[in-house]
Amino acid sequence: MTPNNDNQVITFSSDYPNSEYRFLEANQEILDQIKNNKKLVIKGSLKDEAVLCTDDKTFAIRAGHTSNSMLLISKDSNKIKVALQYHLELTEIQPKLNVLKDLLYSKAINNSLDFEDDESSLGFSFDEIIDRIQSSEKEIQQYLSKLNTLIYKNRYIILSEHYEFKILELILSEATIGGWNLDSIPIDKCMENIRAPEFILKHCLQLYSKQKSSLSTTNEETTTTTTTTTTTSNENICSLDFNKICIFRAKQLLTLSTKSNMKFEEFMDNWKDTLPVGIQPNFSMLKGIAILITSPTNPKEISVKFIDESTLPSIPKARFKELFQISTRWTIDDIEPFIKPTIPPGNSLEQFILTYSRPITTSTGEKMIVTRF
Image (tube, rainbow, N blue to C red):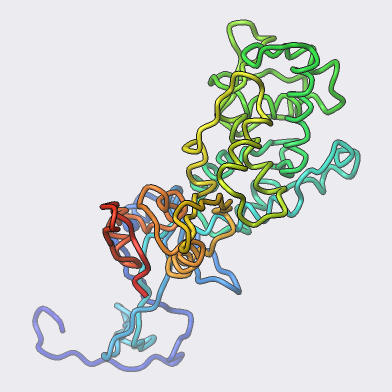
């Protein structure tokens, strides 16, 4: 149509159909990014759907089909370039960042000898991570901080769980031998007595400490991305966090145990025995790490089950299915930390839960959820 005519003649171009064109439906946020010359990146993968990333958000790119054909016509020549029966839609999603954890742990540091190898083989540069992970840069940076990574020679590295536990075990042993209070660990003494790279030792002290400060290191090229670090007013004294020590010991017991489920009383007794005198563990510390499972045949028989959230399926329906295989009934408080990473942006916790489960009230009046499928 034209302003002055009812009809307009259009013809097919010589290169019709041109397969280089796609129709993309963009929201106002994406349009503003384009108008302001902000960076937009499309990332593809052989195994996952393509995503479009802004600086701080990730959008899935999915096809929206229509029964009508949409024509792309050159404004100058009135020639049809392509006719399509679908367009691409953008849906903001939670990126699958557990892939990043798997990537980093594929090159996890297992001992101090790893640093004697080719340094270029340690960990990954930020550019390598950006290229491999389908997520925005800000979301990647936030997850790297959550994983407590180290930056060594401009490369992101992570300690294996075994090595991290070993270093902390050495710190706690030195505290026992030296009679140190966990509120005042002498950092210099740790350096003298424990054979480990200084920045690794300080990194572990940072991970399990109370205050938000920083421990200096002699290696200027080594920094930590974790925000939970510590010192007291005396820079040579470190104050360990009792809750973190309790969680550390609990994870040791649960991951090293040959039993898939440990009796609650047995676990609590063993847990307390592994802790310094005066520290009282509470099972509520393990929210998002372990749950209590009551035997269906004997309500008095309660066991402890360790759950590694990062190994659960990234697809919500599959994640709920696996969680309900672990326990047929959940409280919202117990299940929340295991499903929170998969809640789509804009959805409330309750709305998300009711999509895959239904509420019930037990004979004792407790409100719980069970599978919907």
